[in-house]
Length: 328
Image (tube, rainbow, N blue to C red; front, side, top):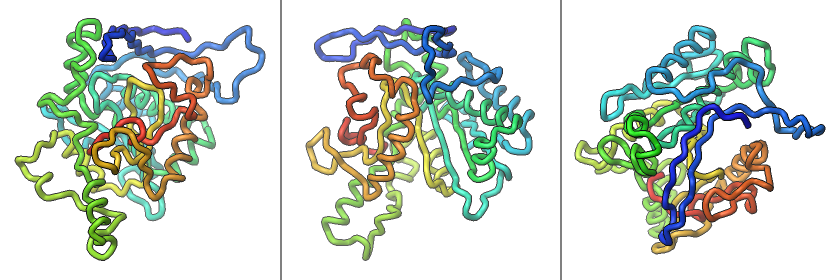
């Protein structure tokens, strides 16, 4: 790995005071001249991708350049604004941008809900560039994805937090600066706790007679003007209600693992408990599909980020079995 941009942030991750050096590296993998056999998933691109950290203006410029390069398959739009008034830009990649086609699945990737976890933004910007350039070059796999799927990529959910962390710098900012929205909300855990509503209805035998288990409405109190909900969260919810997504993923920093729902434990007072959804086999397969084709997740020699070795579980875990979190 040849790295061009490195920030090192010492943090205290444990009550005992042990220090973990958190390093976020954005770089280009280089072939090992001593390794004759190439791993099947060690694929590198020859495209001239833009490997750097992008601030808000530069992020918008990358999206604009891609849109100009691939105008027939891309569309830039915004889903709302941050607390400080920055537009939350998304880019759509599809053979008919702006149109929902019957039978064509809608997919989304989001990143940067914690503003100081910056690699998600860069990964999505690289994905945007890669898909455009590979589509133009005739890559059949990419062309199939674009023609048969409507893909939405939102690189920065929390641009205010990103700016706050960037202004101070990781060397001085600490792990929490920029994590939350400008008005203090953890956007990742700011969504309504629909799990508890469903489980309570099941206990009272109201499912499916009065409460449907495939669509639990958002409570009115949550959507009120006085609700403790970030502007960014409201924008995300409105976006998800407008577009019938069948699948979505969110990129975060801090660990090398794929989590799948549920994220909240069903048993009260229990902080770690396997809590599967009725579609658990599908979510487990999706999580494994991602992790099994990731260069580092499949490397048995990689170091543990903190204290838990997720490699023992194929680098996937049920969210509630890791740590319970309502509204995520």
